[in-house]
Image (tube, rainbow, N blue to C red; front, side, top):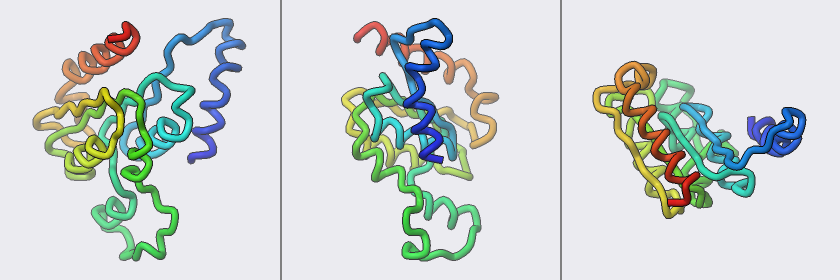
Length: 159
């Protein structure tokens, strides 16, 4: 998963050239499980990106597996398991996190942990009241879109 994300990130200039387009701003976004490669890229390859947007991210892969009723694993069994908190400690990109308050798959406490771990000067957690994991857009579409738009405008205008 991470090597694929890395390959795409490294290809951004070539993709732009093939499309005969230049990208002034590039943002990385990940939802749920996709938060892991997004955080990886933001932490390890921040020079490619101008910001990080996370939708319903998880903080710790081992805890997520246990929470979802996966096998009873010990940390030693999960060597290299995705720990987004550790990677977020290296993230300095402006960060927007959006999460539902009623998410029972990945509780909002995961988003709060990631926000605290994030080293970015500009960081924000938007809580969509009453939204779960798979109905976030349905319950908070206007807020979701407005927050992403405001975030991008703020970064691209240099504010």
